[in-house]
Length: 193
Length: 233
Image 1 (cartoon, one colour):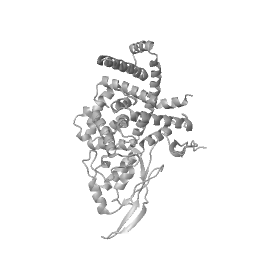
Image 2 (tube, chains in turn brown, cyan):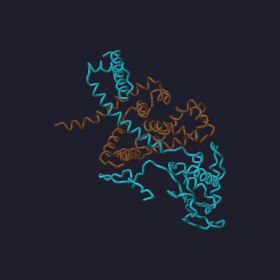
Image 3 (tube, chains in turn yellow, red):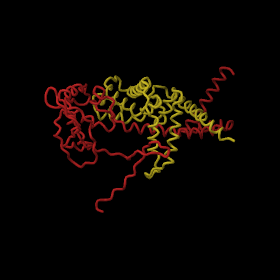
Image 4 (cartoon, helix red, strand yellow):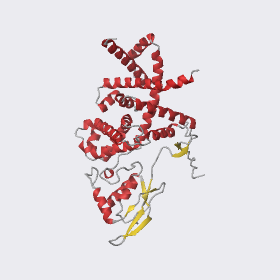
């Protein structure tokens, strides 16, 4: 069904339409939260906070065309409000543990301990790099990694021109490479006789 | 270096980064490739940057995919579960049934019947069964009602059971409730704290269980279920 039809029906109280919208967009909502949430804040809790706000506030959305930026704003506000409250949760650890569980199998349902731990470690390292990435780049870089997300779609969510989106992604990734190289340098030096 | 030189250098760096990003994302045009090769003819380090970028992007996608997978488990609450209701910070995943059951404390608690096949059991949270308190609680849950108006906790529970059975998510309610506590009420009778038992069913891709790594960390790992033996055997 067309997005505007869904939004229209959801605003009139059609729960199925609202569910369909949420299911369509929640993956990128998670990426937005990841970009703005304080380190160690529980992603699960933030997603539930956003879900609650969507149900409560959808009636206040005047322009159905503004649904995506509206949803993004809810996510950004939820993440920042949590930061202000200084909620200290073990979200990162939880994320890494999910990673262990989800990627540690050998493809035939058997748990591969070494592979799972190694990938979890990489995930932990990457999450640390994302935290150090300048905020201005973080959201575009992460949204680009959501399955199938194009520059045009990121532009529709963030309200940035497509060219700005592309530039921020490119600069953000370079910053990430530099951060990764900085992080690797002490190890390499230590390994050199 | 003049300001113009700096700006030019920055533009060249941006262009180089954009080319790398396009190639890694698989969206580079033939013209982009030609431009990259021209740059590489003067500065071969661009190839190693490209390789680094591919590796980092793979790791980034892993992290974002994982966050998306977590999001896939979060469903929207019904309007009755919003912050107008008590107990706002609910774990909404997998507990909706329990919450609605808790809202139904004014119901006579021996009315439920169990139908169908039991596949899993969810015990709902307990609460005090003071009629006046539960009535007030039900009143506070009245909201703008973007879905359908529900005027009492009893109706909420009945609706939950009805919809749950229709969708196959609820098997039924066990006829027995477990009494946890009973105290005399100053106005007469007793306040009874009890546990309702509602049986739900869900389908999941995988089953996980807690385990401990060699380093002593608690992790969640897939549980290998034995292959079911066909009944005919």
